[in-house]
Length: 278
Image (cartoon, rainbow, N blue to C red):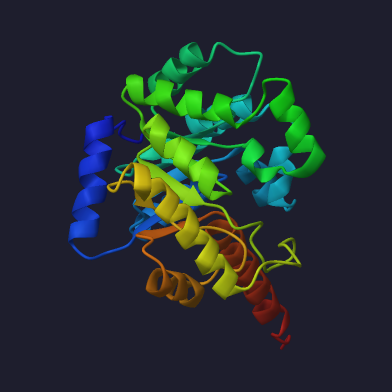
């Protein structure tokens, strides 16, 4: 069973990795096997998203933004019954839908602690919406401010806090809320059987990441920033972004568990089918 680390213990682990000159690498885990393999590879953080369930069932990750299941219930169940039992020493973070109007969020975050999670991230997030639907969510009190409030509450009860942002202003708001680690989200990950077909260029992804990073560090120069999404899917693309921004690592979900699994299973089956009978 995974160890539950305190906020300060996670901070110390992250700081030690960066001091050693290594990037912080975080992986989404939609099942216990993904989490176990990521840990064997030396992952720094494991994150459970409701989208992981859809992703590892062969559906697009963006299904996690739709009303196909209760996001907070899915994450609790994935954590308690699947991922936490498979992990030994890596901090595990919960994707929390902070805008959920049906929950007492402070009570729910205490449940997150009791389940064994070491931290949280704001997912599903309204940051992934724009245009009229975003305007409407904000107008009825289900907007991004609810997510910054969730992050502030999580800090109060000893959880390590991370967040997705899509704009420099959202990044600034999260830094004001006291978030420990910010993940500029540059879009749905490309590649594979169900990845995004359209994405910004790698150069644009790096520029957007750096803009959100700078906005957060105007508030808190010590905030950790990890790249994520869009065309940033393979190690060489991560290397490009780390070279052209001040990001200190990478968060992979589809790129960490879906793409490798797709490639590996297809190859094994093809190799087996290439055999001939005596």
